[in-house]
Amino acid sequence: MPTHEKLKKIREELRQNFLERGELIDGALCALLSSQHVLIIGPPGTAKSMLADEICRRIEGADYFQWLLTRFSTPEELFGAVSLKALEQDDYRRVTAHKLPEAHIAFLDEIFKANSSILNAILALINERVFHNGKEIVPVPLLTLFGASNELPEDDELTALYDRFLLRFVVNYIAEDFRFLRMLEAAAPAERTTITLDELREMQNQAVRLRIPAGIYRSIADIRRELKKKSLEPSDRRYRQCLSLLQAHAYLAGQEEVRDSDLFFLEHALWRDPGEQVEVRATIRDLILGYEEEVKELLYESREIRDSALRPWGTSDERARALIEVHTKLRNILTKVEQIVEKARDLGRPVERVDAVKEEIEGIRKQMLEQF
Image (cartoon, rainbow, N blue to C red; front, side, top):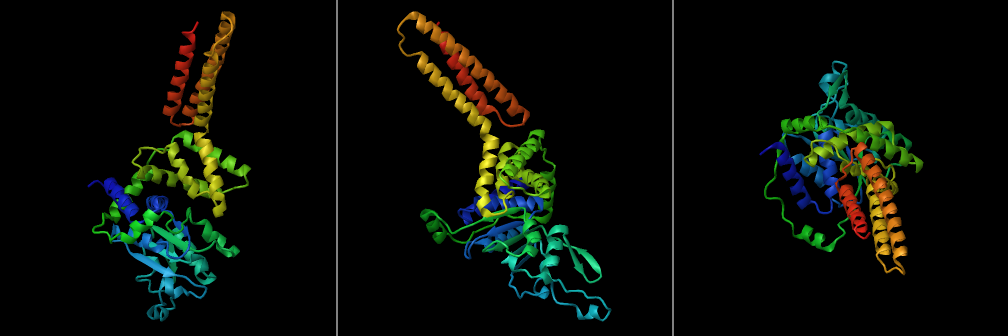
């Protein structure tokens, strides 16, 4: 089976096993494809760790590390005990076997309980993919780290850690009764589609090579400008990282390049407080679909003009003047539509639906011309 087909099958299986988690599943897979990290905010019992563990089980040869942090967590718990043998040689080295520095996938619950004694090491792991072990700087195999918390960080020293999670999701308990019943009745998966680490790396390489059209860059700049007006200012680094996220999302969808539709997924990357997500989503939607809405308004206006012109008139002269006026108005509307289509094409946005509306307006104009 081709690797991309395996990825699609994994996605489908995860969606069957984790109900009402479609966006989170896509985010987790995109994080793997783009070597990014995922933060999941929600109450206990919402399958946060279970999803991370299940994803790791789909990658043959991948090591998994999971830990619940507290204010009293020690470096030994995450990074391993100090090697007594190394100490004899004046080397403060840790034995990292089966600990975070050797994990491909990691899940840290209550991650914002991290104290200063382990915070810097975690940052180095997720930022630079290295672990400072004694006298050496050791590369780590970490692909994606999943962090979970019931709440947002309050301490300023945790701000840097919070910012390193490109993808952020808020999850709740299953809302719909019928899905809740499906969850109760669900059995453990009979079989799992898997990929190898080499196959994952190849998919990462394919994703990062996907073309990003110039219009997408302009759209990101537009999103940034509009969010700034609303006092929402993600960092330049975050916007830069969003490029690989868009490529991963396009790859997951089986596309050969990034499209406008991929931009909607940025709603999971551009908010800082959960209350901002609605605003981010609305801003992206207005920018991406705004031209379609504008064309639809012009279509509704054209229909109203036609219906008004076709009503009974007192005299033939009144009718003729009305039809001339209708012809002029429809011609102006079509000019506006053509300008919108041209702008949409320049931005690299799909214009099929706009073209369909344009054809309907042209049909209305033709219908009016036949009335002369």
